[in-house]
Image 1 (cartoon, rainbow, N blue to C red):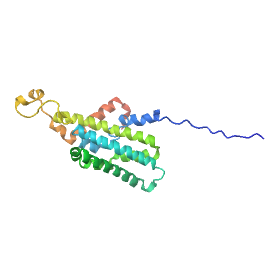
Image 2: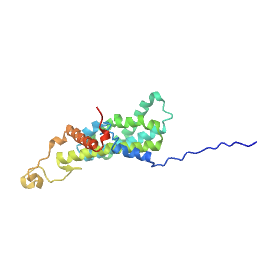
Image 3: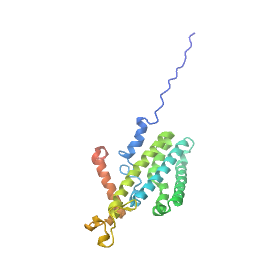
Image 4: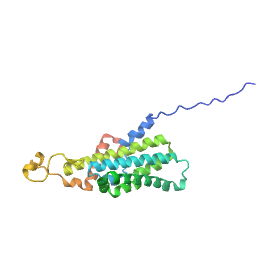
Length: 232
């Protein structure tokens, strides 16, 4: 009698940076941006983008929390009871935010004071909770890690661009350093551009101007990619 042997065909392992995984990094930077396309995390984009320094610190904080949250939830995805998954996610995110808050208070107290409650509000950031629920809870660790980086960087570049525009036109500074010389004082002490009659636009410091800058970014994005325009 001839023996019948079962042949097990192993599927090739997916590359760490396969086309699918690369899309996790690239899509949130443009076509699936969490702020301009999904309209999530808009509150911090309006509130803390007065200075580039604040935007960078907030972006780094969200990056740390999102990476930590996605990786931990992905590792525990098979043991988290479905009924309490939201509570577990909140506990994980809250623990990471506490770490961020304490580090900022220890090493960047001035920035921590300016960001005030907005660091704590990372706990309820829709981007983070959305990715934990929609992606990390159903995918392996590596893709979840890449998804976290992609969405955090998509969030970050919007914050930095908005802060860049607002700080330059609102106060004539960048990272706290004056770009155009002194804006107040005796005529001979003023920077050249101010002696020509230029004034800082103080309206740029107000939160509504952040919304306008974000709106301009959304308009540019949709004019370049017609697929993002929603049909009525």
